[in-house]
Length: 587
Image (cartoon, rainbow, N blue to C red; front, side, top):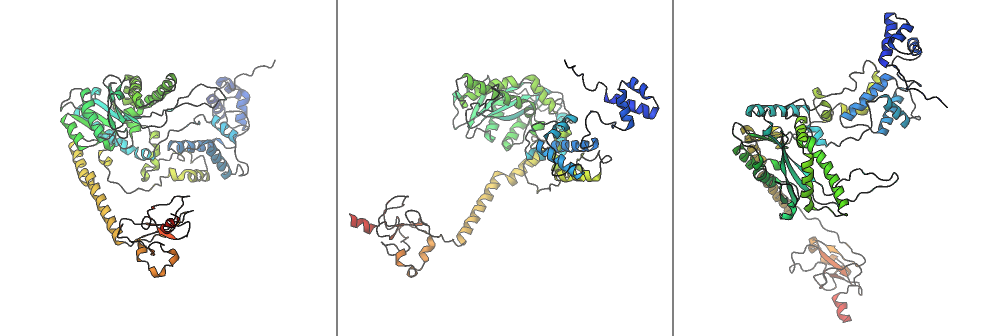
């Protein structure tokens, strides 16, 4: 029986390094250093003689790239992944192959393989293959360190001004969540060689759930927005106590729906307020959340409306950070189980309130809500809660050289040649050097309300000024003016003539109004109407008709003005057509 091999490398790598230094610098004997640091004597002799490098920590042949070269490659891969432009498996292999070719260690005809990649990943445990989360380009651009720091400065000022930093029962967060009826099936247990499938309800309109929580961990009963034109009592059947709902044409929230929710649903669950102890409500800056009537109402009822920075809710909004993710997973699992237990019954909008209330209550737990406020840095207040790697994608869109963050080559200049650094700069330079040009700034409302308390007097004045200058009434005036200008241009510009078209198998010609001005004498008789003997019909009878259609008789092959010189208005493919003369002869 073959003896079982013991574990690989019983000694510590740091102990080997210390034994090497003890012999080289302190003059300790090899035998004593091996016994003192508990490392094999032969292994220490190989490092001292130079047969094996001191940095080599595993047996086998020497790797293609040195330790310094692989470290530089690893740093580059990590940097590109952090900024949102990471490499896939094959791209990593191609990158390493090109890198080895540039160093003269490999030929283009002999690229690296998958085996090299997996050995490379085993040597560098800080690297692994994972599926990244999708990040919209707007979120990548806007989630900058400057914007986040400005937001926390304003939030801290409001909390200090109204003395609510230590009062979590007065800090709320409101957000919407679209409940997809066509759920995403969860992972299931099935046969190893089976192609698994899961039945869904099919595509349908979305039902919006408006949720609200506070920093203590309490949740406000949900509010549903159903697609439709009339609110039915059956839509709220089985919902949790206190839940309410309304309808909109699309199922999404809008300005009227959100304002009604704030004034009639949320208000009755808020604690008592006073000018010295108001309630702080944070939400994102969607256009449906900002209206002058809502702001005036909030000031009257001692409510502070604080708008988060634009496109930063994935980092700063508690419900997005830690609550709606578990809610969506529980929703998909519940819909999957419901369809199985109900015998394949489809999920409609009449089951959404009953099922969504269950997952809303089970996932938005006090511990989960408190963790969400802590992770977003609101309570307890922590302005350093967002790490640098989460805002790294924004560095690829900044235009200032002061914000450029390229750790790819900063720590490796001393250990690598300039050609290797230039290689990686060429492969990822357009991303890492921040070459995006600054675009023309737009006068959007989000630049005023983003990261601000819109109930403050100075912000409210700016909102009113922006509404007066760029509000819906101004947009309508611009659109009406542009329409009038387009009409004038159409009236003054000459009309282009329309070429005659032929329909097969029945020949039908079409002519435009310019045919009235054509010279009748220049038109051959074979192309004129066999009834009126003219190319252009009499327009005085029907001045509203612009295009004239022609039909060719099946018997005499003559052309006739359709709808003018015959009662036939159109000819379809395969239909028989006779001019009035041939038709009278047959009768």
